[in-house]
Amino acid sequence: MQDYEIYIEENGLVNLYKHIKAIYHLDRVFVVTDQNVYNLYHEALERNLLELKVSFVVVEPGEKSKSLKTYQEVISKLIKLGIKRNHLLIAFGGGVVGDLTGFVAATLYRRLPYIQVPTTLLSMVDSSIGGKVGIDLPEGKNLIGSFYDPELVLIDPSFLKTLSRREYANGLA
Image 1 (cartoon, one colour):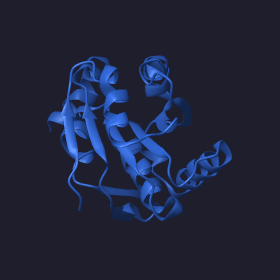
Image 2: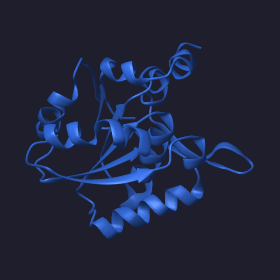
Image 3: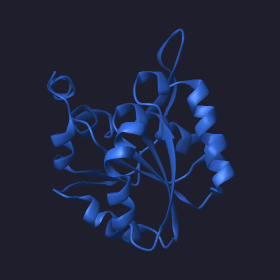
C-alpha cells in the first residue's frame, strides 16, 4: 500500500490538470469511463486537461461491464490507442469503472499509474478509496482482483447533482 492524496474539491475538474502535472510530466492521458459519464463530462474533462492529449475508452454503464470480457476489450482498445508503460490511466466514473480501470492498471504492463475520479456517492465514499480493484465472473462478484492504490483520488461533490435519487440513496445505504 502506498500513500496517496485524496482531494475533495467542488468543480475539481478545473484542478485535475494541476494535480496530474504535480506528479507527472506527460503529454497524454487515457480515460476509462462509461457512456453516461462520457456524455455528461467528456467536453469538460478535455477542456480542463489543457494541452494533454486525451484518449477515451468508453464502456457500457452498469455492473455487466465489470467482467472479464470488458476487461479484455478495454486492454485491447488501450493498446490500439498507443498506451505505454509510462502513461497515466484515469478512472472517471462510478464504482464499476473504478474497479475495472484499477484492475486494468494493476495488470497491464505489470502496473500502470492511475488516478480515480469517482462520480457516484458510493464510489466517492467507498470503492475509490482503499485500493481494492477487480472484476466479476459468472460465478460471483469480485472473484478476480488485486490491491492497487491510485496515485490520487479527486472527489468532486458537484458530480452528485447528476445522480438519480436511487443512485444517490444507494451511496447512503
